[in-house]
Image (cartoon, rainbow over all chains, first blue to last red; front, side, top):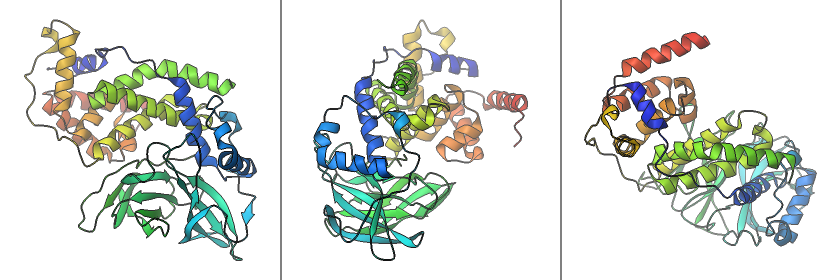
Length: 235
Length: 175
């Protein structure tokens, strides 16, 4: 090859196969589920979604015929439901992040997920605000939606839905350091082992103005660990 | 079906072929390409309320490239060889089959980042600044990866540099 235009022609030559007609019903069902997990607990409408997912999820999600309507998505509404004391479906202990949220603090806690549409997912991770009186106000829940929730690697990585919110998720494996790239710099997460399952490490990054990329986990010897689902979701 | 869903279906039908083609150039594997395109559309649908009024294709394309690049970052992967396939000039090729085979083998000889830059610059036709933004690299690194990739493909980078300069002049970009 001796000419740039010929490279471009070659790149634009149709591939030697007919692109598969993708299953758009499956795409919309999975996309709707992904959106649903992101917006759970982000407002009154979302509180209903939580109830629907956790109580009647078999009907709402398992049916799969009616994906969420994009126009229905709440615009980053703040939560209106707070829980005094420990939520019934909390797993393990809440992990304080040290990050301020108004007069309170962001905490992370594990929460039971029982959804027929997600047979390999048993728990999710809730970002909540603990108020001065100790009450918890849920913000966003994230959970694995593809494959087993305790497979080695990153899971349920959730970007900030508003200013001041951290990027958070969990890692399964012997990670001692978790990093990401932001504006060309490497930033390091804080992390804590989950009291309900020692294989699981909760991590969170200090808030940034933009999305983090290239999440990477390292073991004690500085060796890279399996990535898993390390793409940051936002919604 | 909601109106937004109708719009998404129309968008997906119109763009899935191009997304699969881009993914195929990035991965060299048809099935990986189909999976990547499908995953990109899943994420695009999840964000549809935000992206439908903007450039939905740009969003899907960014997700696609990031998905493929993240796949490359996983620990088990094959590193590209420095040995290029036997070079053949496309103008001498008898048909598209040989051209496609040469192209994929040539792209396989590039590093993952070189390959991504070559595909984004010369198939997706993105300017260097946008490639840099999508790959979270500096413009200088993108230039360097592009030059190195073109050199491995035995193409002069100067011609591409002139093309980029013309584009910048036309769009008023200053660097």
